[in-house]
Image (tube, rainbow, N blue to C red; front, top):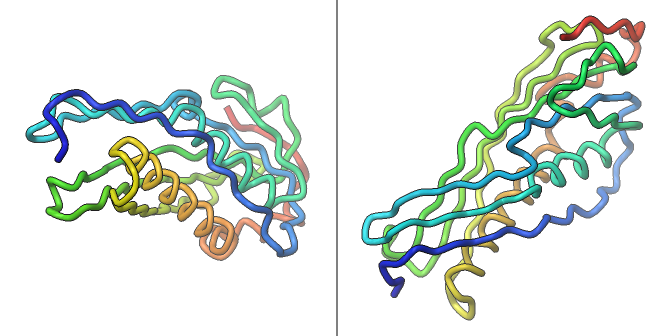
Length: 191
């Protein structure tokens, strides 16, 4: 059983294997929000003092890897960088829409479960809102053979890998970003 004390979990960066498919012939700018460098979710769970889940920079790493595998070239932008200083076909801005988890005493099982929902906005090279896609990911890890921190860490890692798989397989279809390949004259007016 889990005791009524504070529990802290830190997530290591998730490694995403290079998929075996043809990359989309686009130069994309990827603007990551500040929380991707140090995302910490804190929550009081009934019967617990507090759970603190430090995803650190694992979200930034996830999106860099996924889009690095997906596109011809990825330009990394800071949250305050001016898009007009870059030349690209599309700008992608992901954010964490929600992060939730459950522990065994909540679900009456031996499993830790993590849900992460990302919202991904795509802009064309002129700064027009091109597409928005919401990705919901899920990870589950049983306590069997692991301590509570390792089990929750594994569930979060699996949720991020689930998100990566969904993006790699569905991003072009869901956002139609591939249609921007020949429509850009590289003029950027995004603020």
